[in-house]
Image (tube, rainbow, N blue to C red):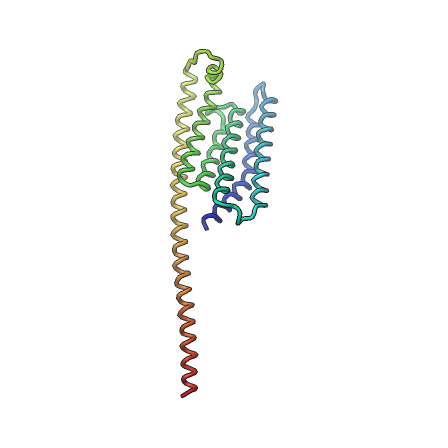
Length: 232
């Protein structure tokens, strides 16, 4: 029952990806207004193309594989691949739309947190929320030029603008963790409800089986009584 529910969730997420990948691309088109717009749009188009090709693979893989051969391990690997590709894709779009907290693309990380809540529960939701926050910090490093300074070997200077950027990134990191916590908590509640429902169904099935046994016994007794009556 649990495996079947996860399989349905995986299919639903693959279907939803067609929409939010194109939505992210539309956002990158609208947000790019600087001199590097042609380069940024080309990079966004490449990122979207790779994300869509990955989704085509996920779609046909899940469609063509026999459900009986899809083990829990394979399903976990498939779902982990989905979330990883989404996180990388959203990170790239965030870099191409200004980077850091000024890019509205960081809102897409909420999708990854919700997806992980559905597929992996509490622990997965917290981990993906933490990774989303780390990626946001990484984009802030790139935007403020600190990453370039580290690569070039020059001294790292943390100015007021960079301090404000990292403060905002820290706040958003905490927001992501809060989303992950609440998402995981909701996932636990839903799983507990499903287990309770499954337990009630099992009990009802037990009652039905017992009633069927009693019916068979009653039928045998009735036939025996009719036979004795005829003998008498």
